[in-house]
Length: 189
Length: 284
Image 1 (cartoon, each protein chain N blue to C red):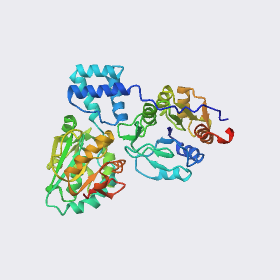
Image 2: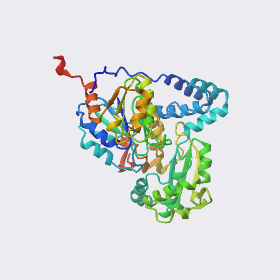
Image 3: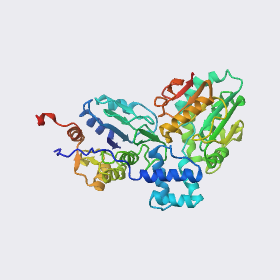
Image 4: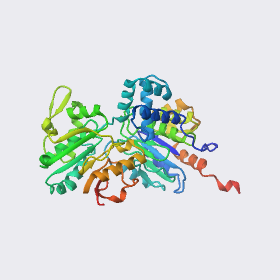
């Protein structure tokens, strides 16, 4: 599965990535974006505008399905259990709830090497620990190119911690995911 | 340039610590009779790892040895696994919907029993007591406030909360349709807000374990908000069975904002009263 974390400017970058993906994109995508605590449907509505894949806020114990984008609801941690999502209102981690680390670490535990993690723009270090755990379990780390980031701190922190080669602009991240996940059939003919 | 990379999506492997964790929970159950085996995996793991850190055991297996040898360490583990944070009038929209859509129906009953299941430190109990008082229902209500942990129940009984939280709670209270000045309900010293004792006049605090205990009464409404998120689906189904059994016909069930009946075995026994606020009514 794909897990994505973003903070300051993250929504904009995520929109660009989702725009690149077709409705048939087969993997589940779970996102933790730092957001206001008050409930509102605005975030998923905005993300849906550019996304061919259905977008919704994850519900507790919701099954994890492909071709779907799940967003962490405000003021909850989003976690990946082996069979479904599960939510928690445990204390914020580094002032964040949803916390990107919580999402990433649970995804590493549940899916091991079958995880692609993407750290987008942001002004803190959330995601760094979780990305390191995903990497140590054999998963793949992508960071948004700090030069294209509204705030480079967060992608840079994950880049420093993981040394990943996969540093791209949001547009390239979308293209890269497509290439990874949807084999280019034209080449094989 | 986007470079070529081998698809990393090999078969998902189980968490290497999953075996240790399961072993810990089984051992705790065998030794102490406390059952955390059906708690939601990610949450229970995070909390156990916090114990591993605080108890300085390094691994889950070593934590198990410590917990089995030392009842005080077990006590600390149990506190870690059972406590959940709560707030007054969390999700004001829920309380507003309850006031507007449920209270009018409740007013037709001469006597009411309400159950706050998994009340933790009691913030929701006081919120409910305030709301019922403002609606003139307090005198004919009995609120049963239960939790598995005695420790949080004694905090709930005391009704003393950090003064620093009152600004947020006041805002919540107002958004929830509160009719008074919120500060009327507590006295403040320098650090704490002490809620007025009359609010718990009709409240009964008692130990009850949703994971094992039976139904103990029939209720007009049950509140269990952001408690079952810590359970896996099979335990959630058990608790839903318990609630269904404990609700009067046309009784109300209130869940947390991101909880839904949709994935539960009991969906068909309820109709939604306020979908987004997760307010349901038992219809069969």
